[in-house]
Image 1 (tube, rainbow, N blue to C red):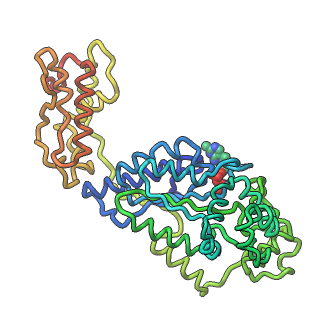
Image 2: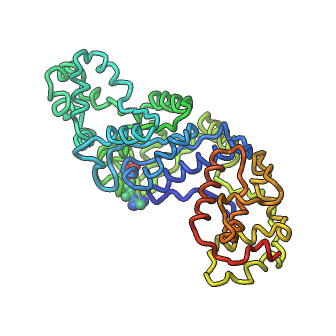
Image 3: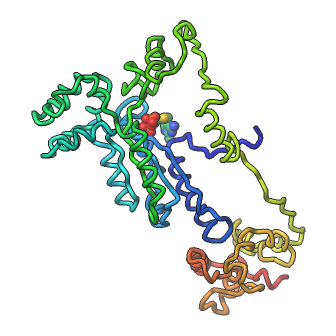
Length: 408
Ligand SMILES: Cc1ncc(C[n+]2csc(CCOP(=O)(O)OP(=O)(O)O)c2C)c(N)n1
């Protein structure tokens, strides 16, 4: 698979960070007229434990400041990480909400599934909402590792008003009260609201159960992350719960269960293939289209070969000097994407001019180094960048006594 290509996201924290910078780059491409990315969106699917990594939250402010409405985070809040609760004594969803909202994001919480709506509609004095807010994540995890009867007693039973709400309900009905992240209608509504949001990035905080549908030995257990094999009994439950048409005989002892294929003409299969086709293939693929750049002629490097006088030259300075000998290195200058962009960069004067203000005769060489900075006239961010560069040039001492232009 020589062209297989993916972002490196397995180390927790890299996914959120690269998603933000990818979304920002897509905006950049669009704003500079290089590519129409107005219909592209970056979706990052993240864990609630993963949000504790510094990388996960380090660039949230930038995403809001840059108004990245092409970016959606979906945080799978199953309240568990590798081998235990994310916030046993707290509420990670509330915490994440304040974090994202404070950073300027649009926050959508999908906590309760549809079946709770009926109870919430009857909760006139807010007793149920109060109970929901006062129950820490560790308890919610315990409930889903127990049973409907346990939830009746230890959750609803804590307040006579909430106990009354479910008095007519069976334990099974209570057990089947879903969390929002497993209710596809609620999730669809959240996705729709996210893609319709403008001027802000969106985060969807979806409450789920770790090991959902895998049976009582897996769901919401602290060890779920480490459990790699389903016992025959769990396998049968899983099959029944998801209505998978595989017989007991086909399951055998459960060690090597068969794969299920819905058939090449089934609705699910044709839909899946169609989506793949529309995305351009079955796997992420690198499709390089850039033409190979010619090596600049040897004389391009003359300027650095002569040395830098008394001080050691920085790589950046040397590169800048080479780049500036445009007479000898025009090919790669011409093929740089920024020169193709319909922006002010293409309209800058053919000869570089100094942007160093107040360059005295004693700092001639500084002015010369700074002369490579061409100020763009339209792009705000580029103006900021060139000002920053000019400032840093002024504050650092020149490394050459003789301006490179003079030697040409
Ligand atoms: C930086 C880093 N540290 C540790 C790990 C090992 N690791 C893999 S998954 C995981 C727990 C993830 O928990 P969470 O983000 O809540 O996601 P969940 O699996 O519950 O969906 C850990 C610690 C890792 N991948 N990267």
